[in-house]
Length: 273
Length: 310
Image (cartoon, rainbow over all chains, first blue to last red):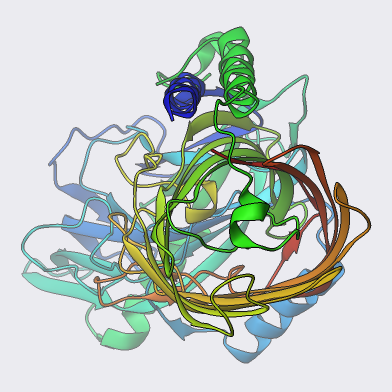
């Protein structure tokens, strides 16, 4: 028995030596960030965090926005050459359910961020918050589908007071009707879901493509939401809570853009390769 | 713990070399296992006949590939090499106790072309095999046993930067205490022998947020002994399992999309005994029926095993 016991000890030592090593080689990576700003035509405006926003709508309502939260529930990267079956399914879904009620979030995948993030439009303008890193396959991508949907318990940035639980949007403030001097409060909230397809643009606003390859494996995607036109098309004095709330969500998504830039390794955020 | 690339390669090589050295270490034992049990059949680890104080060591080197997920969307490819050291001891004629300690080396290739390599101890497994029926005391030709055991969460679980656990398929172990129950039957009719085993694993909730599904592993093999040193074996190994559950305990449980289902491997083997009490086997497991759920493709498994009676 002595030699087998020694052999066993030797084998165990070998097993322990073999254990507990790991290493990683990075592949394609897309750093995704989210920010807001007043919107096109208001480049000179910059509000600090917590400042009430003054807006004049397309119907000449003067608005003071005191609270505005939008939940970005999903970001899906779109290949330039989308699989035919996938495109057909998406088209069918849009045809059958043009407006849907939001549901619990799914899993992140290499081309989908599915964890909801709260965008606080009263926070400082043009302050990019990092959402996550996508690790998609190499290839050419032409845009993203940006979805606003209800916040679940895992939503990042969810207010602790429960005011946004299960909701997609919360917007509060006061308005003054054209030609009048009396302030009236307004409040919009919704649990509806909406999405928009955003083609990629470069930092100059020109259409571009995102090309991820071994030569250019890293890039940054910044989702910019413009809020100045969020109450356009709404008659604030004649409120229709359901329709108007959805209109606010659609306005915000319509005033969003997806800006991509290639990253060099030295430009990568901390923790990136 | 991370380590430089040359260490990553050297560690398992060194470990496996030491294990091979251990497996081939000469013993002073002069007992002949086949003489003691009264049957000349060459038995691979797990299929041996019991006799009191039988002590058997084993080492299995296994290579397998696996792939889950949709191509160009979320495909994850796995290449795994596993070295499992086993020991089995019979404190009584009717009882065989065994333990196995795997070391797992895995290379994962993600759809982004990122690669991860790690080597770690896997889950230790303990088994007790109680022989409840033998048609005769010496050299039985029919043996029926009840198997019970426990897979223990000795493998470390990989965590991501945010503290959450990586996907279950990326892990070297289940992260849970998993009891197992089963039956085995062996029939010895020199030069033929037959072996069947049905084992059910009943995983509990892991220390991460998933729970592996209940799985049923079937092993069925027929062996023909060409001469005292060589035998050929043909097996059919199956696995039927439930899907892995995610977000367990959160109230939002879901099934892991590419997990669960059924797979059947056809497994030809060569069994060779170069020395008294040393049995080597080379197995190839070819998946012939792949009814695994979702996008999940298991590849051919190659295993080299050795069992040594001390």
